[in-house]
Each structure stands twice: as structure tokens, then as C-alpha cells.
Length: 223
Ligand code: 5RP
Image 1 (tube, rainbow, N blue to C red):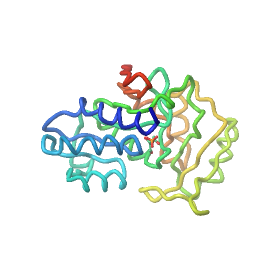
Image 2: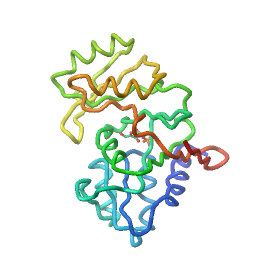
Image 3: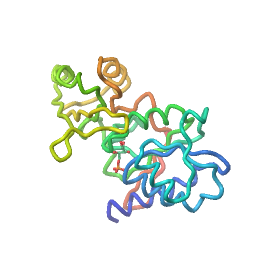
């Protein structure tokens, strides 16, 4: 199966976690796009979605799924999202699609994080994928030095030669060369650095379940 087919497989499988009559938390990315397309079949049995990005909001609305502001909802029973990496504890690296801050906010208001990913995302230790960090632009130079002190190389994410601007109006660093052996501690520490909006380690908001797309079908991993 191609990677795209694996993404479609787990996107479809995630429908079993969507609770009829409720609002579902929806992440961002190419795997989640497959989930959103599948969710259209449940359009009439759910109230709607809370979305983690403008891109997902547009896709949901184009399929006739109402999108609620996160402030209109106290708690969601489930949040469905992809990952750039996931380890054996359900700790993840996210933010390849630039939506990490809103993803963490919606994940935090959800009782259960269901991660949907193809098997290429499974790692032993987080850090192979360049770690996304949403930052306040004026802190970029100093934050690069802070990551260098940890052995990482932080680069400003660019598109067409210009800094990528997130849905929150901020910039992104991508950090290579890290081996994140203590994700909980790492997330807490980096999130305290002045100028960091959100680090892309999702350890405090880890997955409860991962639906992993493999050549042999969907593997369900609970943490
Ligand atoms: C977006 C994310 C995505 O979940 C992550 O980048 C995985 O994306 P894809 O499903 O396209 O591989 O964190 O900010």
C-alpha cells in the first residue's frame, strides 16, 4: 500500500471513535484530511467539530460540517490528529503542518487523543523529524542559541524565501540534531523559554490510542 492509502485507511478507521450527537476535535495535516473526508459520511449524526487550523476549518465547512470556536465548548470526548513522530509511550512530535499550538489547545480540551498515522511515523526516540517550535519573531536569534546549547540546530521555516506565518501570526523554528529521551521534561523546559509559544513535543497531551496504518492493516495501540 502507498503512504497515501495508509493515511486513508487510518482516516476511515478513526470514525469508530467519533461519538454520535457530539462535537469532535479535528487536527491538521494530510492524514487528518482523509479523516475529514471520511467524517462527511457522519455529517448528519454529529453536532460538528472544533478545528485546529484555518485549513481544516475550510475543509470541514466545504463538506457541510459545522465548525465551533473552541471557546464555545467546555470539553470534547475525542480529538483526532496525525503526528510527525510517535514513540512507544504515545509521546509525539507534531507541527510539520504549522498548526501545533492550536492542536495542543484542542488536544488539551479533549478527554482522549486518537493519533492517526502511517507506520513511517513510529520511532524509538523522538527527534529524527526536525522539531517544530512556534515562536515570537523577536526571540528567534536568542532561541537559536538556546537550542544550540542543547546540541540542536534551529532554522527559521521559510516558504518562497519568507518566514512561514502561522494561523496565530507567529513564526516557526525547525530544530534538527536533538534526541528527546525525556519528552515530559523537555516539553516543560522548552515551553518556559521566553518567546516560545509552543514546542512541538506532545508529551503532556500524549496520545491515548494510535491507529497505525501498516501493510497488514490498521494496528491499534493503546497507551
Ligand atoms: C500539523 C501536524 C500534523 O499532524 C503532522 O505534521 C502530520 O502531518 P501529516 O498527516 O500530513 O503527515 O502536526 O501541524
